Structures are given as C-alpha cells and as structure tokens.
Image 1 (cartoon, one colour):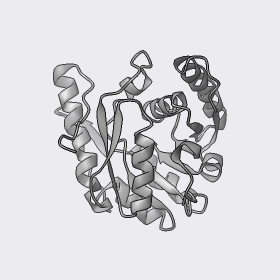
Image 2 (tube, helix red, strand yellow):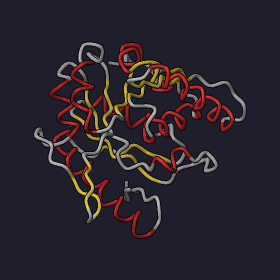
Image 3 (cartoon, helix red, strand yellow):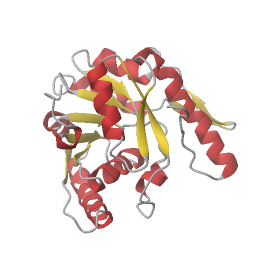
Image 4 (cartoon, helix red, strand yellow):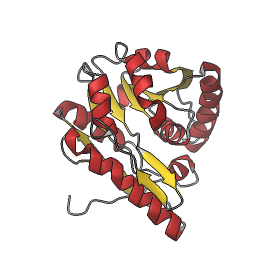
Length: 231
C-alpha cells in the first residue's frame, strides 16, 4: 500500500490531471509541498499543464520549488505511490480497465461524479455497479479504492488567491489504512479535513450529493462545499 510512509512523502498521481478538477487538486497539493505527477491521455498536454501548475503552485508557496511532472495516464499510474482518478465519467471504465496492473497494490482515490445535464439542470446518472467508486473497485480488484474529493469546487481549488479552503472531504472506503491515508492527504489542503463517511457501498450518496451542490451553486452563484459539524 504505502509501506507506512507519511503522506507528505508520497508521490501523488492525478489521472485526468488536465481537466478542471484534476488540475485544481494538483495545484493545491503541489502548493502544499506534495510531489505530484499529472497524467492525461495526451502526454505532451500533461507536460504543458504540469509546467503551468508548477509555476502557479511555486508562486503560491512563496517561491519555493515544487515538484510537478506530466506524462501519460499509464506512466503516471505506474510511477505514483497513490493515484487520484479525476477523468470524465464517460471514460472512467475504459481508463481504469487499462491500468489495473499498474495500479495493483496502490491506494486509488476516485472523485468522479456520474452527472448528466438536461433542460432541468444536473442529475445523477445510474451506474450499474451502484456508484463510480464501486465500479472502480470491480475494475481494480488488487487496488485499495477510496472515494474522496467529490465536493470540492474546481474553481476554488484553482483560485490560489484564496490561501485556504473552507470545508471537509468525505472519505469512503473498506480498508482503514487506505482511508486514513486519504484523510491525511485531504488535511494537507489548508482549511480542509478528511472525514470518514463509511464503507465504499456508501459512495453512491456521496457522489450524488455533488449534484445538490451544483444546484446550490447555480441558484446562489456560489461555489458551495460541505462542513461536517460536531466531529
């Protein structure tokens, strides 16, 4: 898994790191001092975005040199210690099926939301396995799949003029060591906490709640998050 290493010593890979959510997580983690590998289907594009992320994260960290490199999803999956999946839902299953061997034995954090749009707004798409996280667990039987980072606004993640974020990260998973690591990773984002929210079978509710936040954002022109009280 992580061989008992502290979370700050892990290399974090972000699959789909050129998209808004993946890029936002990458820049915040890099600014916090995490070593980050940014992945994409297009390795050249990943390298380009990694350079941009490194520049922005370094400036936010007060000019301190940060470690961000780009490459293909395949290369990043193999090289990273822990991997965050931030690809579009439409490509989720195909992407993970191709990477099962590279991701074996690793903590895989899935933040993908099965969201569709129509004239009434956002709605939840049905996932045959029950949730996107459960789909990941089926496709990656030798990995430790954890659900987290669903409710973080990509806009706020990328807005480094805000040094801290206000909210909590709900973490679901079936292996205590894996969820502990992801909670600790969430805590590296200034202003954030990782809060255990149950087994992986509970991921469906966590993913779907993102749709409610999207509706809040549209009504109030906001970037809503979550805060768990009395914990």
